Image 1 (cartoon, one colour):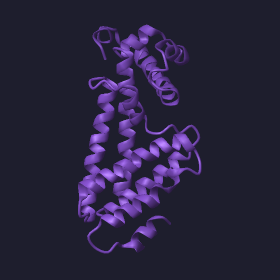
Image 2: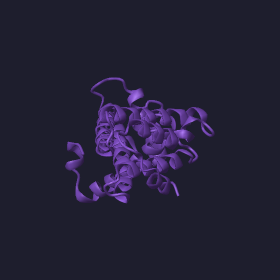
Image 3: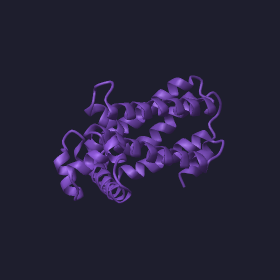
Length: 214
């Protein structure tokens, strides 16, 4: 919160917080559906039932509002990822498969427009843009986690497998927006399985993987 917000009295601060929450929720819907650049500040505050001053008391700029939206998305992404990990302790392949299956289900929901972080990175190519910084941090962390999981699975080249898995996920985010239904994203879980099979040192425990799909 900026300096002007800190100077407000408690009652005014509470009102500003509520307005800031409405602005953040409204921006989240609009940014994801229409893209960040396509949505102006005037539209956000109008739909939120707020004012420009209330927006700038909570966020220093539209860029910072966009970064806040993406930090929320990043947090939700990792909550889903860690939930899949927690469901299969010590079984990285099953962890990843569960995450992918749940992702495939989310992709079939109406209004799905891919990964907000990927979309933002495309919208903002400038290296230092606040929105891009959040997106890049998420993708780098995911790339590292996938390589770690690949190593734990026993892949002969864990970084290569991790990068292959990252490419599959990014491809699914994009292709679902292009084909909507009956497109390449529907094959995501099967292709992930085949890529892992081709990358492991020893025999694949297919029975355990098969049970994860039940």
